[in-house]
Image 1 (cartoon, rainbow, N blue to C red):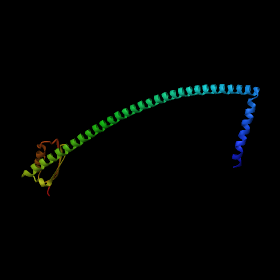
Image 2 (tube, rainbow, N blue to C red; image 1 turned 90 degrees about the vertical axis):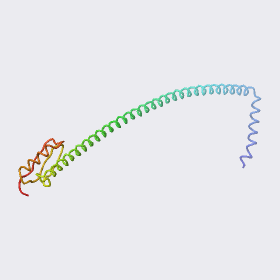
Image 3 (cartoon, helix red, strand yellow; image 1 turned 90 degrees about the horizontal axis):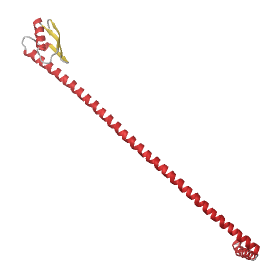
Length: 185
């Protein structure tokens, strides 16, 4: 609290000294010159600050333009990358679709061949069963790709030959491998 109490008298003393100095013409001249120097320095400082601000603004504008160009280029690059990725994805999807289509067709072809082979086998078995001269129960018929294999045992060579003739006469048969054995059961 003592400092606050001393502050007003100290200020009064400083003001009194300053006022007595102002009466001296030499002090007044020096004060005037100092004021002019301060004024000139202030003006120069203001001009320097303005010039520095202008330079900073120009540099900032240039940096913003450069950054904007870089951002725009990055956007173009990203756009092109996305476009290429889309093309690559489309090509991959088309290739996958083609591959799937080929596999479906191959599976369909395989299934068709198996169905055709099963039909040939069933047709031969039906003809063998319908033929009184051949005991079809003892003859196995396998068909792969139109190639028929006959296996089993019959009593006579005539039965063996008749089974082969029936198989060869069946539609869809490419060849016959007759492995029927003649002998007693």
